[in-house]
Image 1 (cartoon, helix red, strand yellow):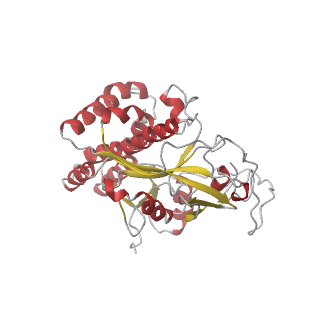
Image 2: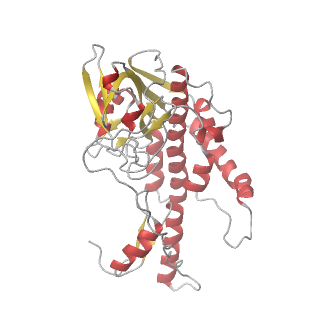
Image 3: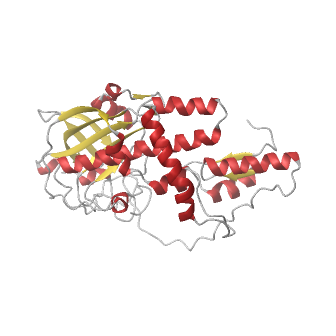
Length: 360
């Protein structure tokens, strides 16, 4: 454990600033701060070192105060047992996939998926670009033109010339049916191959991922897409080299870009799957619309609220055999290389992102 008094910086998707800086701060004898991203973490480290060295004006930002919550509204909750299915339609047309089983695609060129890069997530989330709080200095848009986009172009050119990207996909289509909270994947003969059990909202719409597929009792069979994408291991080896060389800013920039490129590849491939399933006719024309998921179908990655059980990754790995594209699953159900993502692709027009812990 940590000796009392050591400063602690925490971050990550499962934490909030108020939880860290109020709840955890109260039970730890020392400074505790939340970092939204690695760049905020660097700024906090600089401040801590400045304080330690007695630099004039060095100080940590104030602790975040929690907003007072509005009075809770009483909502009827589901009992712990029993499967009350949501009102999601059970009669939408089932698309015909171009093949059953799995396929491997290698050698995907950067130009094919670079246009799917979410610049906002990269510049704001990964790279920490933002206007100064004082309102002085360049605006965010000016920072994009002078820093963000030129650095992005330079890094993409470098990735190309140094051949650091090895984009590849393994994907497949499987017949399936649903039963209560389970999605059951079938073999060609209609026998159970494997099943996923998903959490159901205990209030609100009572959604569950299984609801987006034909119920077993309908006598009909549905289709689910599975995919694993990776931009390869070389870019991870380069980020590791930068980290070992103490080139932290270069490391953070390249690492952030590599993560977003894997996400861009996943979005690009998801669009291809929608085309193959014949549900892409109403796709929005702009990237913004795409990133807001204004299209039919949804891509759910393991570990997110609708499908939180990371152990399900082993089922996807068993079906897709992603080692064929150099992706392996650790004992902790983490994908390696890190710049890889897996997903279930759902064609149902009502499929959306929801938190199984609460209301949609």
